[in-house]
Figure (cartoon, rainbow, N blue to C red):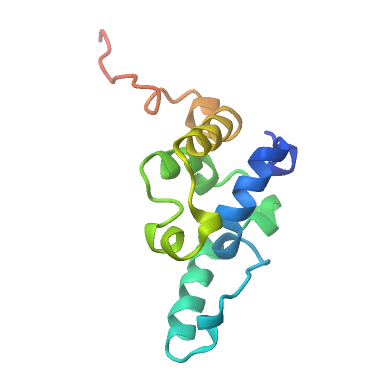
Length: 128
């Protein structure tokens, strides 16, 4: 399996900008992260994101279900979350950027790389 470190530079840049604040140990905290009670909510959200998938600990997460579903999460609009993208300009992905990430994740980490045809429009119709 290819690690995220093997991704082309444009993919690394997109992942860093759109994902790292919640899914790495290199969070850049915005000004409002220092206002109570927002700071508690924000840190809880970041902690949950890191627990689900942490790019800083890729060795632990590379084979996880979350890593395998990265392309799907982006395709379905779950990631990056709209409230994050609204506030953080670097989290706004164009359609082309989303497609670039989806294609890379699917071909290197996603279900397609594991033989599952669900994301590619395959069906469960079998001649049994």
